[in-house]
Image (cartoon, rainbow, N blue to C red; front, side, top):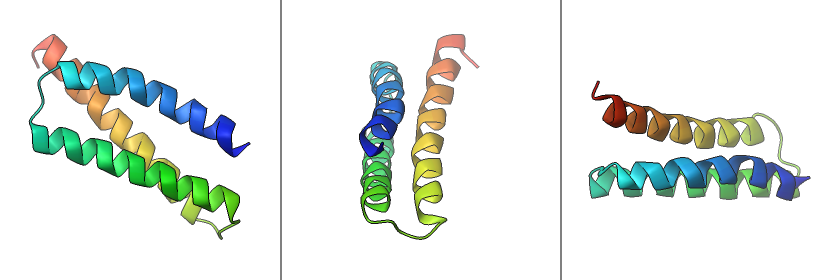
Length: 82
């Protein structure tokens, strides 16, 4: 279940992350997004493997999802010249 959950979140991140990287973000901002996402997914995996009490797993999922949404917003903003 943990692996399937990772796939459900990592696959969209890879697509949006590629588009985000191609949109020309600042290097510091891009690295921050990627590192926060990686840390959140690692924390979520540990929360899945070692049954940690809630809200640990939920918070780590939300942080990773927020990073993906932030990158998608930047891609759309760049593409639509907002």
